[in-house]
Image 1 (cartoon, rainbow, N blue to C red):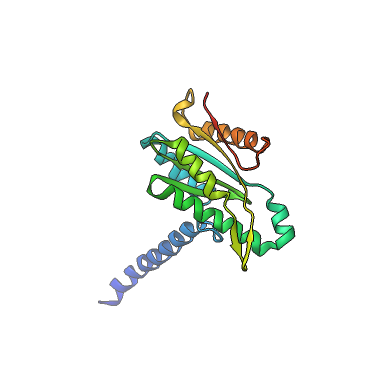
Image 2: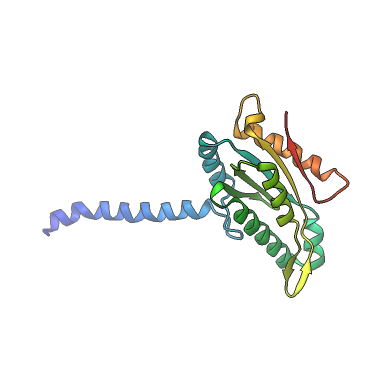
Length: 185
């Protein structure tokens, strides 16, 4: 290759390398480093696409007593609880949904399932199972709120998240710590 052709090609090679680096950085920024779940931005983008193609249920989840767990057993135990919750939620979603972590101890999912009430009961049971940390069984309690998009007057992800959030806080207010509430409109 002659020097002039090489000089013309070098900027394109540099641009391609830089573009690849930026793409990798963006991809990792859309994943939570602790849980491996999509972050709010990454999940929202995928969820919007998902709900356009599927009759979906949107879930909002929050660990109960997370501060007490951190204070009693340490932040490493809290991190283990977050990772365990993420793994359980991911396993439940399987190929029928998308899980994400909004931040702190809040998780989110969008899911399509023909018998979603039974599926949510299965999820709640899995999420509220104790976890083993350093040879010790620790309690894990998660409040779950859900909203089926078909039950909304104008189905949108934003409105479904708002309704699921209200349902989650209603579940937290029940006498049983481990509960699920559904918005039925």
